[in-house]
Image 1 (tube, rainbow, N blue to C red):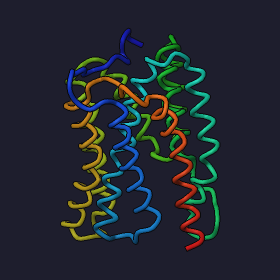
Image 2 (cartoon, rainbow, N blue to C red; image 1 turned 30 degrees about the vertical axis):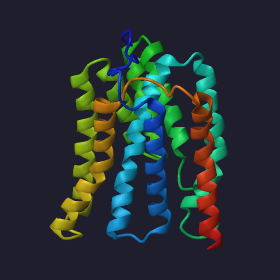
Image 3 (cartoon, rainbow, N blue to C red; image 1 turned 120 degrees about the vertical axis):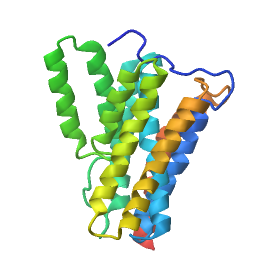
Image 4 (cartoon, one colour; image 1 turned 60 degrees about the vertical axis):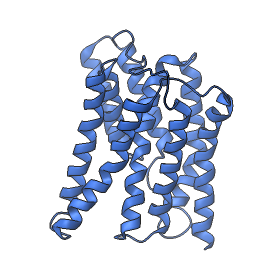
Length: 253
């Protein structure tokens, strides 16, 4: 891994701090989950909220790559991800089960972020290029059963590659955003009117595009001056808590 790959790629004196952007990502995730669980398929509101929710995955992957370099203990970081991933798994399955109380629907996004963290570790620690590629491919394979799928590991690799280059960072946001839009267009082409397919593709790109704009042009490269400990634990605790609340509403409603 090149020295400094985790360094801040933009550091403005003014702008939005890391914690503020993460709070935006939490709100986007909340909107996405609400739409996925409670709104009927095919509605414009559901489509829009799901699209806004795409802000979260790519944003969290960016900050995971950045945070990998800043953390004082990689073992503790991995331990937190694993602990809360385990705690979140039952609420995650309960929330997104379509019929009944619970069924296995895949692994939650904290498991996905744990895999992304392992990618950072592999890129940094494994010197043999063949072994490195094999291990990353295995992680990509494992991520298929996780929330966000292979998208998150790909985002992670792109952000590692972008290093301190503003141009590369723009590419790292543009490529997955465009590809995701094309994927959503192709997935509904022939099944829905062409206008609906185009609208769906554009809406799906909104969240990811907003993330890129927010981080590239407004992120100041800093954490919040106050409430750092609160913010750190809020993100971990909020995830399983909101899933549990949504699950109970779905089951009892």
